[in-house]
Each structure stands twice: as C-alpha cells, then as structure tokens.
Length: 511
Image (tube, rainbow, N blue to C red; front, side, top):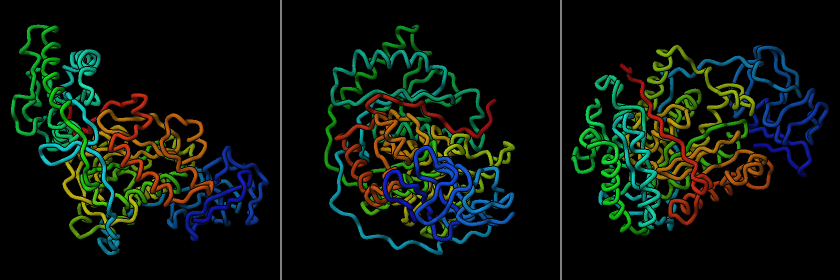
C-alpha cells in the first residue's frame, strides 16, 4: 500500500495496490484544484476527502482499478488527476457463482498464539460468558409493553441488590404471531430467537415472557422445552400481578447470577463478531485491515471469529472461495450467496441498492468497491465454516455467518451465533451498541476519532496518516478485545448505555 505522506499539511493519497489506477485523498476536508503531490501528480479539480483521484488517463470503457481489482468501467474518458465520482463508473457484473474456484488457495495455518486468556463466567454447559446479564425474552410482540415496564422496575428496585450482575436485557422483537409459522423460511427467525435465549452471557437463566395464544409457543424457545423459565400473561390476574410475577421470577434468577464469579478462560472460548457500518473509502485500508489482523491473532489463539454481511461479500466472493478450507465449506459459502441473490430478486431489488448515500459521500462509488474493502475484515486465515442466518457457531477459527448488511439485523444474527463481543468499524460514525454484548467501535479516519472522542474506542485513522501500521492497530484491537471481554475495560457504548433494539431477519410471509 503506497501512502504519499510527509508532514501533516503535505498532500496525501493512498494507493492500495501497485495495479491500481486510482487512489483516495487522505487530507481532512479534501484537496483543491492545482494541488501537487510529492510524486508530481497534479489535481485537475478539487477532490473531497476519501474520494478517488485518477492516477492515469482512463479511456471510455476502460477498467477502473482499486485493491488490484476492477471496481467499474469508465462511463466517459477520465483524465489523470481528475476526481472519479460515482457517476463516472459503470457497475461490473457480479462474479458468476458457477465458475468460482474453491479451496484452491487455502492459506497455511499460522503458528498458534499462546499465553493469552480472558476472565469470563463459566457456564454449566461448558461455554463461557463475557458479561453476567439477566436476559428476558418475549415470545410475541404483544407483551412488550408489560415487559418494558417490569424491566424498568427490576433495574431500579432489584438490580442494585445484586452487584455481580451487569444488567437486565429485555429481548424484544416483532415476531411470534400473525406470521406464517410453518413456512420454510420461518426457520430463520425461530432459530434466531432460540439461539439468543441460549446466549452464554445469560448464564442459563434466560426468562421467556409469553402471552398464551401466540403462534410461536414459548416452549419452542427454551433449550429443553421446559416450563420453569416461562411466564404467560394470560394466566395472570391483571396488570399488577403480571408485573409482580415477572419481578418475582427475575429475582430468583438474579440471586443465582449474582453468585457467578469471573475465572481465567482460554481465548478459544470466545466468539468475536466483525461488522462495518457507516463505511467509507478508508474502511478497506485502515479499520477493516486492522480488524482482519486482529482476527488472525484471535484465530491463532483458538477463538471463533465471525464475519458476515452477504451483500458486502457477494462482489468479492471470488477472493474468498479459494480460502475455503475444503470443498464443503466453499460450496456452503456459494449456497448462501445464491440464496441471497434469489431473496433480492423476489423483492425486485438488486445489488445496486447498496451502498447508502452516506457511504457514497464517504467515497464509496458502488457495491464492488464496498465489498472489496469489507472483506479485509476477514484477515488472511482459512475459512473454516459457514453458518446460515441465525445458526449457532460450533466450530473454531474463521467462520462466515450469513447475514444481511443491515447493522441491526447483522448484530442480532451474530448474537444468535453466540457472539460475545463485536468489533464494529465505521467511517461515517454511528452510536450503535448492543445490550447483550459489548461493541468496540473502530474509526477509519483520524478526524472521526477526534470529533467523536467519547464514542470511538480505537482510532485506525492513524494508519492513513502514517502514524501507525496495520499490525500495530491490530495488536491494540486484539488486546482491547481481551480487556473488554474480561470486564477490565468498558466500551464507550457501554459507558453511555447506548443500546439498539434487536432486529430479526424474517424472509417468511406475514399473514
């Protein structure tokens, strides 16, 4: 990666690959027409921060290359030193799923990384948690108002009595009734709910609050189908008794959770999720590669690492299937891409619906460029497994967990897969957080870290300015993951109590 850098005021650009005929502008606020770089390149017009400049003349129909890959074709002749705006690129065809190489370049496993542990809560089923949370899940949206009222009282009246419990999370969703419960694709929201109820941070003490007449029977949610964790509101005599019953049940579980103590656990007990949101052109050269380096360290230490977001992988999948550890994993990865292609077709949508207006403002011209930057989070390890949406992770190493790209849906599905902690990279900025599991926010740009000094946990923008390497930021992130998992540090989202609602992915019909 070539970084044109000297002093802070020096004009700077980043060219990722020697094959690239584009580079992105690093300087905050962009650079004006006539700016000359150390290499002699002169800007023909103003180019905003993070946006692409042509490093060579490109004829109409010529390939526009970034990350060493074609991200589009020139809709018009482009002169060297010109700002390449999104309107100047024609979208290439997506990789043909029938022609992908599988397991042809399986990376050699790196040496084990030994001597690293975290302080977690050991569960009876052998899993470990990173937080000690009372989870209370609804089986149907109808009960949400009552549960929210009860949880407010639990936090105010009961939680202070149990100092070893980190919090109480109401797991609300919009599923459960008025849905085609037996439709084939209903399996996705149902297993998501089931697996969230089993989340290791709940210590086996999750409660299920149902109404009593819903289609999603509460017994389907509990791991063993037992009734001891279920409370039905239609069996209670009015609102006050509903609330008191929830509080009584919660206090029994708070007492048990309060007895839990942290103990030293191997890193192999961890499931770490990776996600990007509010991405920009820096994502693929700073925060995502640093997250990928940290992912490799975690894999070497024995952890499970999830990367996701099908629509932000689809256009770079030809670079991933060769890394599949075997034919079966490669075929599973293709299966999830094909399923999502059909899902978008049914909704009369296509891949051009991504990126968002904010992504484009941050310099991402199209979904191909966004995908190439997104997959940098996966690091360089072999891909050991593939999960369909909402499936629980059972294998170690790097795993593709299929999810939509939506931050909230992806986070929900990664929680269902058993995620203890999420690394969230962002260029535009978002206060997103999850109550069930901490979220470490990593900025792609120096200016975002400065502006959001009390929301950003790790500043990867130092890579773009030449102040730190990808490896250095990757190690910083790896160490912070272990500190946050151990409860030694809080993320800013935890500090402020910033938690988004969970959002189920339900491709099945609503009746």
